[in-house]
Each structure stands twice: as C-alpha cells, then as structure tokens.
Length: 319
Image (cartoon, rainbow, N blue to C red; front, top):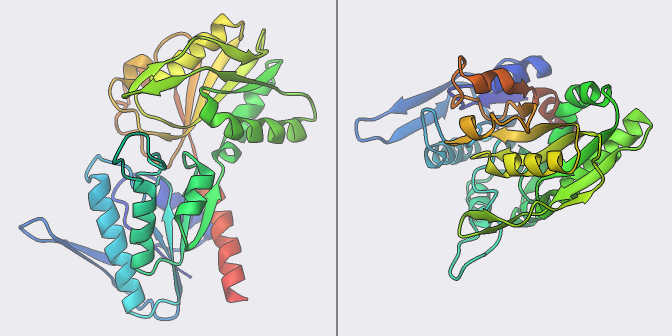
C-alpha cells in the first residue's frame, strides 16, 4: 500500500497516515511561471495499491478546480507508471451538491466530475457524507465508498444524550434519510428511544423559504441537528430557531463539512445553536481562532472512518 497526499493544509492526511501506521510518500508538485503545474510521485508505484488524499474544497490556497485538476493528473500519472490500483480519498467532494437539473440547461456537475475521474483511470473513490448518496453512487461507474459522518459524532452525541431526552432533526426534507439513519444508530447504541424531527425549508433562486413548521416532537429535548455541510449557516440557524420555538431545550448543529462561507461566522453566533460540530474534511480556516465563533466550534476527526475503509479495501484487493 502506498499513500500520497496532495493537500497543502489541514491535519486530516497526517491523522489518516497515523491511523494506518503508514508514512505519506513523497511527491513533487512543481509550478511554472504561467500557472501550469507538474505533479509526480517520487517513489515507484508499479503494482502497488495506491491511495491519493485530496480534499476538494476551495481555499485557502487553491480553488476546487485547481485541486481537481491536480488530483486527476496525478492519478493519471500513477496509472501510466504501472500502479496496480488507484483510489482517490476525497474527504470533501466538490460539485457533489449539483446532482440534478433544477433549471433549463442546467449541468449535472456531479456526473461530469465522475466521468473525469473515470477517464484518468481511477479505480475507486472514497468520500465522506455527500449531499445525495443515491445520486453519488449512480454518477460513478467505478467503485465508490461512502462514509456516513454521524460515526464521527459519537462522542458529541453521547455528551448531548447525557443531558436528558434526545432528538435528531433534519434542517430540510432532503436530509430526512441522513437524520433517520443517525437516529436509528443512536437508538441501538443508547438502547432507548430517540425522537425525530424535520424542519420545513424551500429554496428558490438561491433564496431560503418555507415556514417555521417542525414535523416531530422536540419539546424539552436536546436536539442533534444534522446536515451534510454548512456553507453560509443560514439553513442551520433557521432550523435551530424553529426547533427552539417548538420547545427544544437546546440545539447542537452537526455537519460533515464546515465551509463557513461569509457570513457564517456571524449567522451561527445566535443563541439558538449551542454548539457547531464539523469533521476535519475541510480545515476551518475561515473562522479566525480568536473569534467568538471559534469558541462555539468543535472539529472532530474522520480519520478513523477513512482508515477502516482503506484497510478493508486493501485486504479485499490483496485477496
């Protein structure tokens, strides 16, 4: 097994390597004056089971487009030089939200990205909590491994559950399945009932709409509000306000990916959300360490989830 990381920031890749008890192999990433880049391994990948780590979020150094191009070209180079299998380990998959047409002539960007991965010879894509799992699995013809982020939130859930009655909520109808899976897992682990709720939400032309209707009983409960990502924070804040109005004792907002696009640092400061919990798939570089939001933010590691998936995949490949 060989592990490469193209990430220039964050702690995810070193944490994953530690979990796997492996070192990250050396590579050269060379820039040219006109902006072009050359990326190549500095060890022979011939016949190896290779895993390339690269989270495709935008910033702080490169755009998603730059990162995607670098990853694809590196995978293609590994295949050209005889790698036995190449897996893309992509904690945050860019364009996964655009999985269907909502307007005339819309691109289905997730499917286009999938074709790019396939074109360079990617054998497998391993990623964390995409927007729509079914759309993700259908878009790719190569093997895919989807990891549910709620496994990384177990410690947080245990702390919240200790305070009394517990509920899991989705901030919109589209996330119901994600929230239900976590609720069912918590009921098995805690051996007690966990309530469920959903908040009404509609989006048109980029604007949030809907009512403050909450479907489900959250009176007196500590609520784990779960989504795939936090961008501006408006969806989470709006849902938290609705849940508190419906009688929730407290709301903890949990999301796999913390993009924290402006004005998230201000939006999420409201009293309706007690704590914001995200995974390490995207470094929280948009939240200044000395800001009030930083005191409310908790980053949990998803490295163990990826390590388990890679171990299983590697053992299956060796057989």
